[in-house]
Length: 382
Image (cartoon, rainbow, N blue to C red; front, side):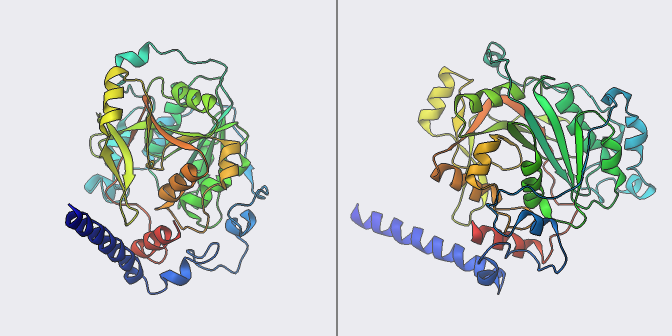
């Protein structure tokens, strides 16, 4: 038995050393990049969003940014057909997957407020939640995203959330190639638009939006989601019960070619390996037993996927926001998950809250310095 234990410990140590070595080999300057604030990003001589946020990623000062205020149109008055049609070119018809890594031709034909399935367990329908909702700011960042998927994300939030709960939807245009993607949406009520004059990446864009948000609770969504019925109250309820809870919905897959919803198991939680790569894992036996007794029971998770979650704004600030020294995206969810648990918070996956999400096989934008270098450096900082 002692010999087996020794072999196991040796293997774990070897795996850890190999994982760390991989980070180093991926970039000959990874050590230097991972030191200090903002070290993972390219040095810029001009004033930028990052500098307005302050070199200390835990800074509390309000950034000086220009925000396009919410418009006056109801989304139903918005000419969504004309808006979505702008996405489709002759090249897209020949190869609809090439430009955005989703079937943009199929997506442009879908109505903005299409019917989506309600995949909640029947027990969720019997749950009662407080109706004195905290004011909520929904934050969505985008870069080179199809108009149709972005619009469906926005419309699904407006249509399937309690109207009194949604104070604003903040769109962050991360120096998108086409400026009017955001400016046209900013004519809709409750939408506020921020445009980065240079690319900043998802992490720093989210920090910016979080600092200027006026809601008590922040909800982060990716730009290719569709929320399902009853998605928001369960998340807000968990935060109301414990301000230090980071509540994540159960994320279902939207097929990137057909856009059909594909349900996933509720018996999963987030985890990560020695390389700090995120993965889904089966719940331990105790949590599986609890879910059999009560399918509505939230599950404590070592880590969250990172793209979709709700958090009390003051708690997010107390935690120090994200680490803005990381670039673009990748690794921030693991670093943030670890910091949340170590600072006395908790991460939960709430099964009665479901959101559909398109998992793209590739991104429609580049990583400055290369994807491997960026992810390796982000993970090293974590």
